[in-house]
Length: 250
Ligand SMILES: NC(=O)c1ccc[n+]([C@@H]2O[C@H](COP(=O)([O-])OP(=O)(O)OC[C@H]3O[C@@H](n4cnc5c(N)ncnc54)[C@H](OP(=O)(O)O)[C@@H]3O)[C@@H](O)[C@H]2O)c1
Image (cartoon, rainbow, N blue to C red):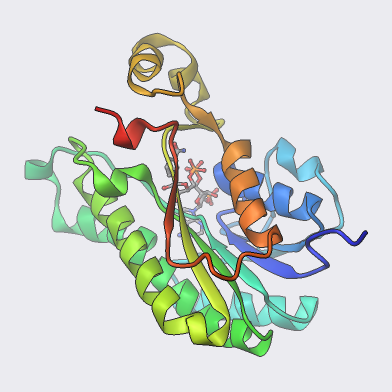
């Protein structure tokens, strides 16, 4: 039986580490050709790199630079033959009390998490149309629908991801392009593993998350991989939460 990926080509932004690296590796295991769009151009930089070598195309790309994004998609389409999908994973997080957060800091978070994500969708669009349709998965956050102290810019940017996803899904459905928002809760990555596995944050999350604690990057990756692999043309525009029910718990 052919692999679900069927050698279709999916670009993943921020594939160097964390959730992006896990998504790139999962897609490669499923038989996709994965274009790893990263600032250093060195592809996956974590242990995930060992998964299915030979299925990656490493491309240097800073998502806040539209030239860099346009060049990256052109290069993927010409070297891999087409672009069938995009995972907008790259993102930044800034924490500050709102009364002390500068507009520059707010704009920086919105610039990466919302404006650059929209630009990536728009610049990928002609390639997806040329491929006869495709799938875009935006990585949001369950912070998109709750109020979080010291996280105003991040929450606003992830709410924008949900809105961008819905608008593009409606506009581009006629072109055979699905747009989805996968919104994780607390996810263990190399950067936060220590804080999430011990100490006060661990104890707080164990009480606060109905599923019992933080999730893993691999679970988010499996969800994204499934959205690309399964034949679900009627599923588009939705925000799919993967947060152990934290966002809906009283
Ligand atoms: N971890 C969580 O608990 C959690 C929860 C909800 C949502 N998320 C979302 O999931 C996504 C990934 O998070 P993570 O925890 O894996 O974050 P991370 O470990 O901090 O990794 C962030 C990734 O984004 C890349 N990046 C940042 N700015 C970029 C730019 N201008 N151009 C290209 N790449 C850029 C980084 O590249 P470099 O290696 O070059 O820095 C890195 O690959 C983000 O959108 C985040 O908001 C995470």
